[in-house]
Structures are given as C-alpha cells and as structure tokens.
Amino acid sequence: MSGSRQRCASCGHELSETDPQLRCPACQGLLEIHHARPTLSGAALRARFDERRSVSRGALASGVWRFREAVLPTAADAVVTYPEGNPPLLDGPAVARWTGLSQLLLKHEGHNPTGSFKDRGMTVAVTQARRVGAPALACASTGNTGAALAAYASLAGLPALVMVPRGQVALGKLAQTLAYGARTLLVRGNFDECLELAEQARAKLGLYLVNSINPFRIEGQKTIVLELLQQLNWSPPEWIVLPAGNLGNTAAFGKALGEARAWGLITRMPRLAAVQAAGAAPFAASFREGFARRHRVDPHTAATAINIGNPASYERAVRAIRETNGVVTAVSDEEIFEAKAVVDAAGVGCEPASAASVAGVRQLLHSGVIDPGQLVVAVLTGHLLKDPDSVTRYHQAADPRPPGANPPVEIGPTLSDVERELRACGAV
Ligand SMILES: *Cc1c(COP(=O)(O)O)cnc(C)c1O
Ligand SMILES: [Zn+2]
Image 1 (cartoon, rainbow, N blue to C red):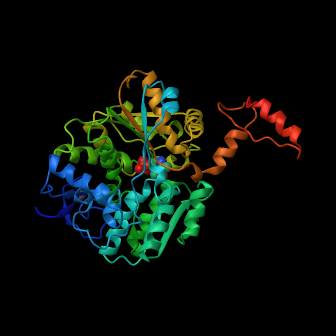
Image 2: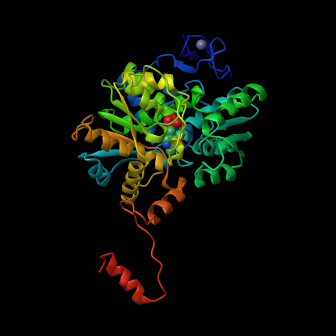
Image 3: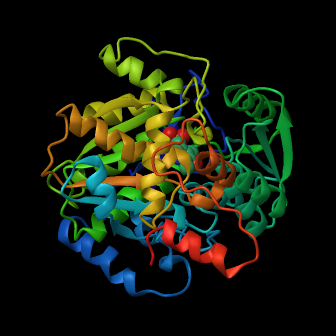
C-alpha cells in the first residue's frame, strides 16, 4: 500500500484518499484514514518533526502540518492554513493545587486562530474539500466548529453553511460565525438534530460536510496529542484528560497514540480520561457498563460545546478508551463552573466545556483513579472569551454566591469610594 486510503471502521471497505463520500457505501459506517507507514520512524521521525519547530512561515510553521506525515502526507502543497496549532503547554500550579495534584500541565487549545482546537481539524478538512473540488462546505455545530469553518472557508474562498441549535450557542462563537461570513442557520432543535439535518443536506444537496464524522477532521485533531508529546520531548505523561461531547477528539487522541506507538515516536501509552457533563453523559453511562450498549440521552448542560446526547464518534471513541486503558467519567455543571473559575482566576482562562477536564482530574484523583504524583496533561479546548455570558452570570450570581465569585462593584465618582474598595480587597 502506498499513500493513504479511507477505510470503513465497521466492515473494512476501502475508498481512495480523494473519494468525497462521507460514509461507507456498503454499510454506512464511518471512515478512517489509513496512512502507509512513514519511511522514517522512531528517532528519525521525531527528529524530522523537531527540526520543523524552527520554521517560521508557511504550512510547516503550523502545529498541524509540521506533522504532515501523520496527517495527510500527499497534501503538502495548497493546504489551507492560518497557520494554526502551537498553543502553549502551561504549568498551572494554582489549578494543580485545586485538583490535589502536585503538578498539572494545561494544553491550551484556546490559543488557536479562532479560539478552539476545531481549527486543527478544519485546516485538514477544508484542504481536502479543495482537493476534491467541493463547491460548498457545511457543518452542524454547537458553536466552535461553525466558527472554525466560517474562518477557513473564507481563507479558501469557498461558501459555507453553518447549522446551530437556536439559543444554545455561546455569544463569542455565534459572533465569529457571522463575522467570518458563513451563512448561519439557527435551527429550532438541538445539536443532534442539526447533525442529522446536515447529513441529509450533504446527501441531497451535494454539500461537503466537515463535522468530525469527516475522517480528515480526526487527522488534524490528532496533532493535539503529537504536539503535546513533542513539547514533553516525547516522554509521555501518565494521563491525558479531555472533555468529551461528540467524541471526535477522544477518537482522534486514541488514533494518534496508537500510531505514535506503532511508528516508534513513543514506547509507553498514556491513559486517556474522557470527561462528560453529567447532564449529557451517554458515553460515561456506556463505560460504566463495560460498553455493553450505546446510550442516547436528552442533553442538558450549560457547557454548550459538550451538550450532545448521541455522540457520532461513539464506536471509534470506545476503541480509543479500550486501547489506552482509559476511563470515562462525568462531572456536574457546578463542578465544571467551579473548575472554570479556578482556571480563569489563575490567569489562564477557558470556556466552560474545557473546564470539564480540570473538574474531571479532581474527581479522578479523589476516587483514586489518578495518583497525586502522576504526570497529567489536561486539555483546555476553548478560549475564555468564547462564552462571556457564562462568566458574567457566574460572577454576579447572588444567592448562593458561587465559589471564587468576583462581582463588579458600582461606586460614585469619588476618591473615598475607591479607597474604601481598596481596603475591602485588602490592597492597603
Ligand atoms: C467541540 C468541543 C468539545 C468536544 O469535543 P468532541 O470532539 O465533540 O468530543 C469540547 N470543548 C470545546 C471547546 C469544543 O469546541
Ligand atoms: Zn462499511
């Protein structure tokens, strides 16, 4: 086998790399990209990836395309790139203390061009759309996929249609989608209904769908893991913890780790911990039953990015958890927002769904799944400013006042009022 192929994860049916179908024509299963083993492996492949860290312009400066052998080896030219990726791996001592860990590293994907990890998948999906000559792009979104699609479609000069659940999209995300110029449809339904509608529109109207059921999105999102391994000099952490909604990222992380080990980039597998919001936790319910069956729920969480009841990448995420000896858990919205307040007050900041990973770390530590001395990387998936309403709501809630609330104080235009407030906060 040379080059890359698309293969049905359910029945093994194969399609060429540039076949624009989104599902297996034989059984409707999801497709996966299979790459030929790179000509380099182990230390030589690590060295190639490491050399490119000094590239400052063009596709190889991207934290996605730097790993092109693992992403889309044949699309070297004509990629649609911002460039994206390269967000920091932060040491978060105050956040670590809150969880009970001695050290916690935060991979901050909110520092991507549109403020979430979705840019990593989108650069690859839109590149592929251009390769196959797609006339127009579409997605269903809880907000961030739409924002990323809107930006990358504009970079590529292609029209885009974004379907979001009306009234359930955070303000920053909706603003971006409008501003970057996508046709934005406010669907009277939830995300799962938006996704069904988008798939129908793809089949009937010939749109190129860039949801994470698109296997090229997964290839791009794998680079979150490759990049964090690289930032740790290829010495893997014990745990990688991430929020889980539609499960595209969980699937991507499992695939990245499997390939990294097969290609000799690492010799030891980190364990994955996928964290859901308790009000939208069908994957955690399946995990508790040893993945005996798939669950569907009516989702209710204020962490809108993970407000999903019927995750599309269920099957491949199950494999990711099994192959990494991983775990799945759920945390309440109270825990998510308390964790978010801690991440925010540490000067780091993230959107609500991202804080699920930090709340999950604390819970898994308290239940003895994670040891206090283990090296843990928590992925922060989106930027603080994505959801400004959730911030003002939290800090101005009165009864009861939430942990770490920092309400604004109204004063008269007098120095004595300023002085009083200065004393109240212990600054003088
Ligand atoms: C999309 C998204 C998630 C969920 O990722 P899945 O791949 O759908 O599981 C989590 N956090 C943020 C900020 C997101 O945009
Ligand atoms: Zn199939």
